[in-house]
Amino acid sequence: MWLDPANAKVITQHIATVLATAAPEHTARFKENAEAVSRSLDQLDNLLALLQR
Image 1 (tube, rainbow, N blue to C red):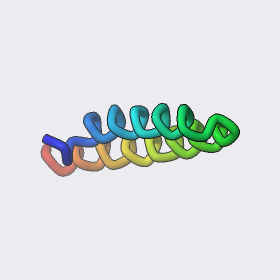
Image 2: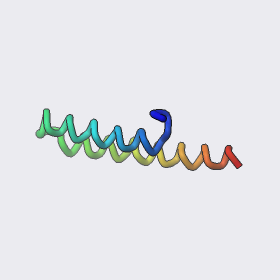
Image 3: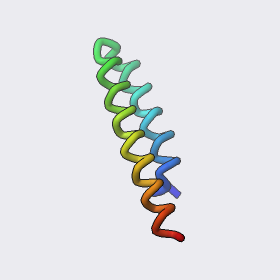
């Protein structure tokens, strides 16, 4: 379950939100990094879908 890319995206967003609350001066960086991870997870999810065909 936690290995599912869709779940990992939710977890990534939550981590970015928590970090931004703890260190608001770095909010933009946390958001950018979370978006980059999200894009990578989308690519992984697409690859996994192709492999399951």
